[in-house]
Each structure stands twice: as structure tokens, then as C-alpha cells.
Length: 237
Ligand code: ADP
Ligand code: UDP
Image (tube, rainbow, N blue to C red; front, top):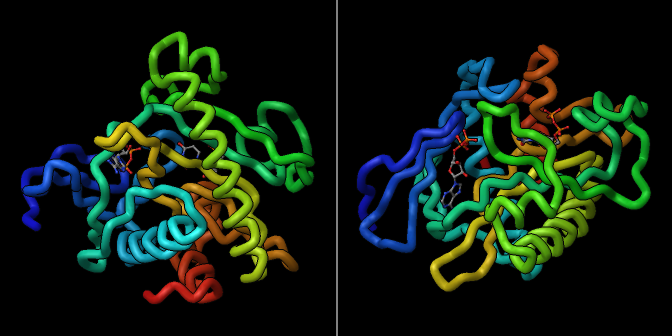
């Protein structure tokens, strides 16, 4: 397997073609962004920690029957994945109120959501990732109703699997964002990454924030918190 030219440079990862038309390499950089890319900083070890964290989680999800992009870890910062035609929609599942939900509805941070909520955002930094609903996805052709139904089904399954996994590690899975794409066989597959950059994790007892909110809110020790989560889960770093 040979690494070929860069296809795309995102805010946190670079995407490379390979000699296999069905595979890409994701390179996790140390760049850390917030507020739709308006603030970017380099954090030592972040690329390596998120790459290994993501590989660990994707393999847990595969084992639970969720189709993911994961193929194999290639290096500290690189992973081989299935090449997907990404659906430009972010699926957000929330178990507790935080972030934009608190701002939008004025509810108290930490309020238990019963049942969980499922939200969609258009992946478009220039427009500030606007909140959308299912009819927008279909009407504007970002995905079909069937694809959307599958994305929702898989998102809720991810929530079941990971809520338990984090709970066993003494952490609350507050919310998370997933991105899906279409593989060459037409199936919907989980893409992008699952790491503390794209979810909220709080210590169950102290409610200490252990995710990217430490960066967004200037709380410090960002990567130290990611490493602590990895240690509790048993992710080999
Ligand atoms: P962003 O685009 O939000 O700045 P990243 O820096 O994480 O994000 O860049 C990674 C890009 O690669 C994203 O646009 C993401 O949708 C895309 N991507 C992630 N996984 C895959 C995949 N398996 N196949 C194709 N594209 C992918
Ligand atoms: N999220 C993400 N990328 C985005 C927007 C949100 O990974 O572009 C994640 C975020 O880390 C959180 C969840 O999705 O775990 C819900 O985010 P929210 O809508 O509360 O927005 P935020 O306040 O993070 O901007």
C-alpha cells in the first residue's frame, strides 16, 4: 500500500490517496481548532493521541456490528481507512445538555436528557455549521431518506455502545458528533474520527471536563485530559 498525493487538508487531519482506489490515509495533525476554525493552536502529542484513541474506539464499534471506515493503524499519526463519499451532515447525539443546546434553549448545563436527543448540522464552516432538520437533508440532496434513517440508527447504536464503555471508565458521555459516508458498495459507513475533539466527556464523580471544551474554554491541560481518558479506557498510546 503506497501513500499518494494529498487530497484534502482539513482543520485537524490531512487526507491522502493511496494506490488502492477504495482506501485513503488519514494523517492526524497536532492542529487544534475551535469556533469553526477561527482559533487554531498546536498541541503536542494531539495527533498521535487522537489517532490511537480513534482506532481503539472504531474497533470497539466494529466489534459491536457498526460498519466503520477503520482498516489499520499505519503509524503514530496515520491510519488506513475506507474511502467514503462523505455526507456533509454532522449527526449529534446528546445525553446531557451542554454546548450549543444550552445556548440555543437556555437550559441548564448538565441536565439529563431523557431520552437522548438526535440533531443534524450542515458541515459548512463558512456558514457556521447551521442546525438543520431531516427534510433539509433530503430536499437539498445531501442524503436520501433511507441513508438518513441508517445514519440515525447507527448513531443511536454508537451511543449505546460508547455510553457503556465510558461509564465503565468512570466517564459520562455527554454528547458527540459523527460523520458518515457512502462506501463503494453503496453502504453507509462511519467515517472521520471519534476522539475527545468531537465529544464531551465528564468525570462521573467530579464532573471535570475531559474533552475539547478544555481548549474552547481555556481550562488548560487539554492533552493531559485526553491521555487520562485513554489510560482509563486502556487505549495503548
Ligand atoms: P474538517 O474538514 O472539519 O476541517 P478534518 O481536519 O478532520 O476536518 O479533515 C478530515 C476530512 O476528511 C473531513 O472533511 C472529513 O469529512 C473527511 N473524511 C473523514 N473520513 C473520511 C473517509 N473515510 N473518506 C473520505 N473522507 C473522509
Ligand atoms: N462537534 C464537533 N464538531 C463540530 C460541532 C460539534 O465535533 O463542528 C461536537 C462537539 O465537540 C460536541 C457535540 O458535537 O461534543 C455537540 O456540539 P454542540 O452542538 O454543543 O456545539 P459546540 O458548542 O461544541 O460548538
